[in-house]
Length: 195
Image 1 (cartoon, rainbow, N blue to C red):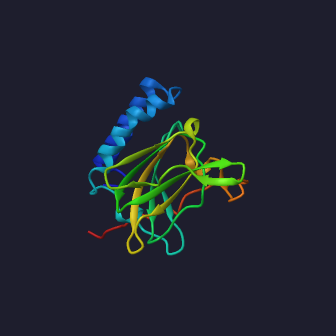
Image 2 (image 1 turned 30 degrees about the horizontal axis):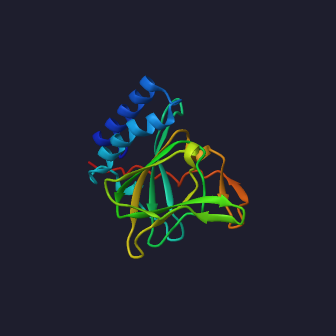
Image 3 (image 1 turned 60 degrees about the vertical axis):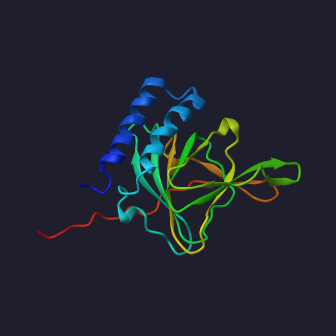
C-alpha cells in the first residue's frame, strides 16, 4: 500500500470531494461547517500517516503535500513542527481547516491596527482530534507554533486551493506585507523492500 493510500485518508478525500461537488464552495461558512467533522474523524486516529510524512526539519517546520484534488479545489497537507518551531504571522487567502493529529499547537489570531499587527484574543490550543477553521471572510491572519519545546507535533491542514502555489503574505510587526509562495517540502521517496 502506498503511504498515501491508507483507507482513513482515502475515505476523507472521497467524502470531502463529494461534499464540494454537491454543495460547491460559494457558501464558505457552510463548507467549513460541513467539512470540519470529516477532518475531525480523520485526525481522531493517529495510525494512518506514513512516518516519511511526519519527519521534522531541525530549523523550520515541514509542509508535505498528501493530496491535491485533480481540479485543484483543495489540497491536504501534513505540517510537521519540530520542538519550539513556529510560523511567522501570515495569511492563507483561501478557506482552510487545521486538524491536530499528534502533539499540540498554539494558533494566535492577529489583526492589523493603526500601529501595526496586534494579537486578536487569546491563542487557541489545538489538541489531537480537534479542528480549527480558517476563513478569509472572517480574517485568517495568524501565527502557529508547536506547543512543545521537547517533541514533534503534527497537524493535518486542508486548503481550498493548491496551497503550495498560492501567493499570500507574511505580516511584519508594522503591518506591512511580504508576499510569499510556500511550496512544499521535498516529497519522501517510497521505501522499496526486497522480497
